[in-house]
Image 1 (cartoon, rainbow, N blue to C red):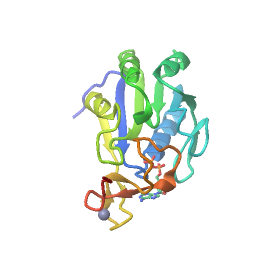
Image 2: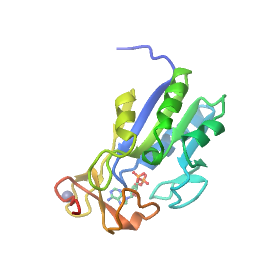
Image 3: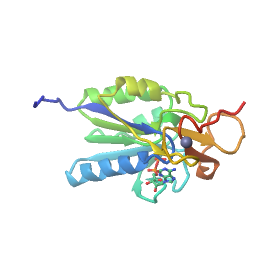
Length: 185
Ligand code: ADP
Ligand code: ZN
């Protein structure tokens, strides 16, 4: 059945580390560019795992991105002509992003936000649970569990340094399924 959709919506791509969120985000960005749409890409400035001004997947796929330290800086960099706004690693951005995204979607922009839905303790990460509640479309990806080979929805921290954020250290994490994931005490 064909249902007419008005322009302006939020798509969320979530899952654990290594599940292909950045790859999927880059795929959608490339298709929007092929469709000759005006696309702007942002990422939090603290994610510098491969490149400060690009988003990169673990499989080395890349796309240019504007690094921003918070939602206010993102707001200042917004191109009023942008038709698609893509955001990577949204779990690291502040609550102010919610109003920015609502404003963009309200005026017809397609917003695509990728990020971790759970932290390494298996708890909802930052503003992600709110974005998931507000989204029209959700893609929840799974990686492969590095212990048993099953589908993995969680991120295991291998190095214990305390705190929720340990940036730019893919080697400090691996994907695990619910059953193999261990929460440190
Ligand atoms: P994310 O943004 O979700 O962290 P990426 O898009 O950066 O994911 O990377 C996905 C790629 O990571 C896969 O295509 C694969 O090449 C690689 N990879 C490494 N470890 C795993 C794993 N345990 N499960 C699935 N893919 C993995
Ligand atoms: Zn497992």
